[in-house]
Length: 337
Image: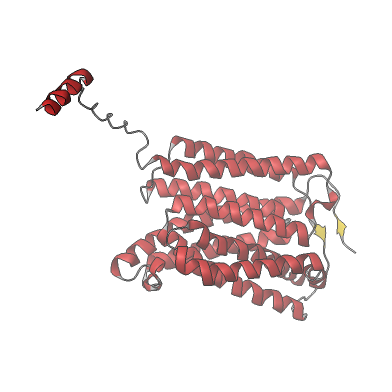
């Protein structure tokens, strides 16, 4: 029912690569612009991390939002040409732009190991690009619907919904302001469902522009509704994460979790690795681990302080020396008295 294109250089993968890289530039920049808007809004009203929405009146936040939308449109188009296992890991490039801009604009210092992390992200992304599987041939959105309603993916979607509900109603009120994983977890879990739906809608647009109208099918509109609901939820909790925690920490952690869940969802739904051999899969996993290593470095450098090159403080002075024999003798005299 589904066919894969033959291995080799794929024009569709190249188109997807260009769109994905462009998306990373815009999205990485949007993190910084939105953070700037959230900071200004927090000075004039209730912070987003405290449940406020004053950022909606801040032009900087809307500029960042528009930048993110442009990036997401490019990302949206990339999924129409290339598999999720190629497009999603390239989001690591947005971390690089975000970290570098945060260093210069928000004065969030980028340590030398952060630079090494950026290099690792680029190397890992290149490895995945060179060994990514090719997109399967799909001629109707009904084929995507068939994949989405198979038992394996339905079980996955049900687990994701339960986990998100538990995070929102139990963990957010208790640990949302102190544990980054709560806000980012909600965004990442829902993000995997969003990407699968976005891929379906992007395929529908691609086929429609090619002359085969896909918007006459109910399934296309169901995917669109899922995308809208999931995106609104992600935006809300991503704003809370950005307003509460350091941008250079939010970006890599969000990327690692989001990419991991998205690749898992794509494996279950689209079966991306069915057409590849063991060495190709192993190479892609190595590339992904390299990217994770880079994001880990970007994360840990923030634990080194805002000025890692500053000298360490001098050690505390030693306690005054006490002559044990003199002390014993004094105690004996006191007892004799």
